[in-house]
Image (cartoon, rainbow, N blue to C red):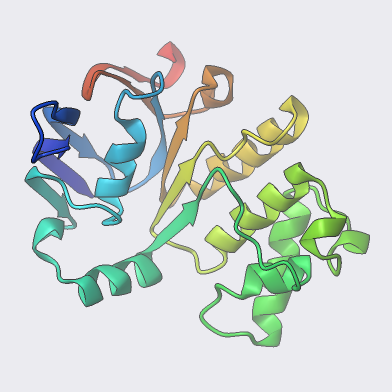
Length: 225
């Protein structure tokens, strides 16, 4: 699905103290599966996600997605790709404060029909929210509950690729593993990329990519994680 060739991202290009967030490496990602990207702060893992998802354009290198060169897309084409094929979970939930939990999920849906609402409820249930919480606003819910709503919102349109940046950071271990179990199931037919500092949530990952100083240091598969 993704073919990355010699990807480089340099910040402070006009200054003498250039920062190489990505230092030129190759990477191939499959059509489906749960892929973990792990590394210390500043290793380049978030920058890699932003480049793959077209939120940032690399300084140099090539990124092919299903044979299409992402670095050649214009702003409108990138927006359409993100809307139609990508889903995003960030460290902050970015929920609409005056909307209920269900409405915060379907706000990202292609339509707001009754089936979409039922699907939103099904997703919330799979993430452990109670029916009594569906109509509550974000301020009435815990940080962990709000994050689970954000994850359900990212999955409402069945994106081909789900980008998740520290998706379990606000969750206790029990809820973190429940969320990862749902993502594991989703990854049976889609590609799920999880950026995290927590190696323990990647026990079910098909592959773990470890980054260090802007490049891939090691890759592990399956049971070797």
